[in-house]
Length: 296
Length: 285
Image (tube, rainbow over all chains, first blue to last red; front, side):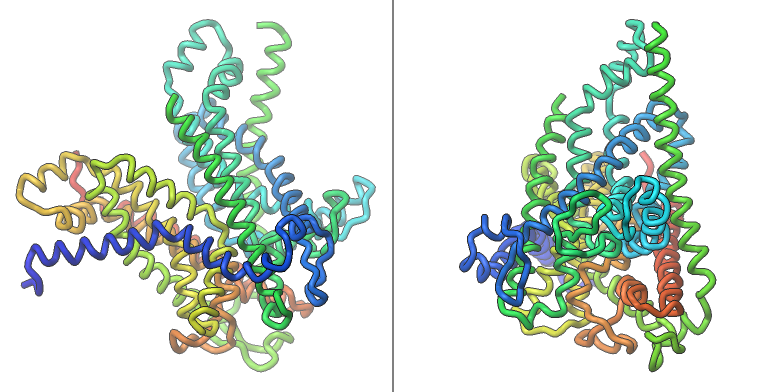
């Protein structure tokens, strides 16, 4: 009935498992190595500090300053987190502490749908709704002239995109806090909000920080949606209404011409390497927060 | 409770309610604006034809090339990621069950990889392509997307396989099964619905991602007709049509976005349905 006997089948399955496992385990190192080898051409000629802090981006004359892109990415990410963090924290507390179970059954599919919408569609929605809103209402109302394609538009779209991601972690964290802790605080006469403020949030703090950190890392690398609404202007933004440019957008916009200018491909691979390093670093640090949280 | 505390309590509770309904409202607005814009331009012609000459200036044709291309790419990547991912998830939960530390390290690595942005995979895939002398093609796209969805697939399967009770495993051992039999015959059957969900989830991720395929899959107006040919994908077709100045072409971008969103919604609904249906093969404890 079988081609191989039991022992042989076991051997085949086992080898298959080990090969797959090795491939997966070495994937982060492979990614790093692959991108490093490609960007070494650039790193040979320019120092790392120069690349990161130089402000002129003129690939055709060999000037590769990543500073505007890094600043753009940091702005977009931080403003997005400013929107996402309070919204997610408040929602997570509300659905876990104040509402009945059925409400979570409404929230979960909603979160799933938000998580499932592809980033291009988010970008399109940003162009349809957010960009005109900023240029026609918010900008004039704040007394600023803006195209709409701006850091703020990118941040807003981005903040919506990472909500499902952050919210899921936060809900898990608040649900994992033992009931007794809450009961003890309530029995001592604390009100519900006092319990949340002084007991739950304190207890969950490492977890909350980790959730925000994961969200931040995710936001930093988001490409298409940001690219579509951020404006793509290589300039240091002065306010959130200015257009900007982010590292992922830089890579995505220029892949077509990167083989035609010397070192351009290396520069783009270096941008990818930077993104990889930021993502690995944040996830690493946040992982230790989560480990600390689980130890309590 | 003082007056101040009461006010604080009220203020924060209303803020929470506001935040929650803000999220639900945003979701409703997104879905509404995608449907409202898209439904006007969706037509039978669009779904069943490839772009004709002058398509990008508003002339006739459709996006069948992108729809089929995306489906082919995401299916290929899901199958490949499944072939690599299932054994890893099984290995973690059957073979390494006594080595908690090793499992933790591998899970940690997977979570790290999960967090890497897709554009990085795209750039990596591109440098691999150059290294092997490949052109932009369906194959290169599939390989890149596979790497990208692999951690998602493994971690979701892993979460399901973790819930298989130890008792089941012990019963199988006592009947004389070896480890790989337990893995492939018992664990896969017990968590069948969860595995399907994991595959469909990864499929959804793969079909919606643009940044990973931007460099690797290329773009073409023809139907995909081979692994080594470039292939069009829906997210990229939305992106390209949207950057056109011609209003008709932009309208088609909205319609394409609707098609993509619908595909993803259907896949996710399907995975929920399947999950319920295949509970029969599961032994309940």
